[in-house]
Image 1: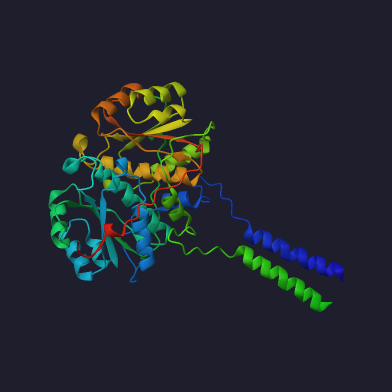
Image 2: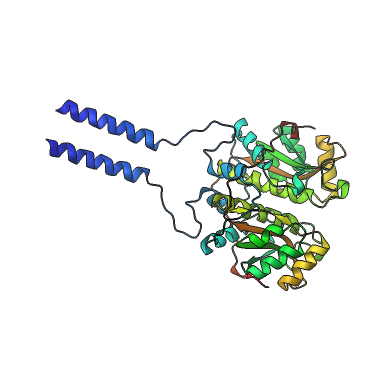
Length: 204
Length: 204
């Protein structure tokens, strides 16, 4: 009988060990590192399921964006969350490369705040800071099963003016991009953009 | 006896369930999502332990950088990995805000490749693409226990010229930033930059 108990214990312990050991993945994509997995698997998603994005996830997207580094820690940004279908439709038809916004449950417009920049109106750093914030937002989306796409607004003057008008932005706020977000309609594959020839060591 | 077996099985099953259930973290930082955790915990690290960065991790940093989105998929970038202490020292003393490079085991210079941009020499998008690549690199570093910091080079002409000379960059390659990387000397805390007032809904 003791032998049977030992056998059963052994079986259960094995099952436990197998189920709890993290999968070690030695593939090039280093999928065992969840962050690297997300970075390598992020893709531009332009078709969305008919499903709303939970408020908690929207908050996380914004929190991620605001965690980006900025020149001299100026944090020269602002964010407009759009979930009103009429406004999404208006942006979609007014901007040249944002057609998908009309079918997205929401979008975020990342903006530069010229009152908060390092060097005033002509600051060259705020677009770089907003880029890092946008990338954080896209990665947070990917990590939560959402799909998103960066559609360029700045520095195209015709586009920034359109967005300013539709969203009633004050003069010191410049729309940087429009990022539609939703649950992907279909599974999509990321591009593999790794190129050995882009890498140099110590000298060109 | 059967009762004892059942008791033992129950105890082991409970242990198994408890140990395998992922920790649900409802804190604002959403630490249960590893990618979001990395994004919220990334910080600028300027002091490094005397420890080299493994080649596999350097490769992952570069792979992460090249996974960033770029305008019309131009991928207008190049990367110079520097682990030669003399060159690190030279960059450290020649650039105004890169003193920490001298004590880092390595650094990566993210560059724009003007031959690959969307609109030639005056393209406004390559710095945004390089910003997204830089943020990917910083996040991959954080996720692998490394510390890094984005030190600005572009668009300061005096700085891009210094880097071009030290690294013998061809004319069409513009150094964008210098990112020293190493194992952090001390544990460091991220800044909390979340501000509710940065968020607007549907209209300003």
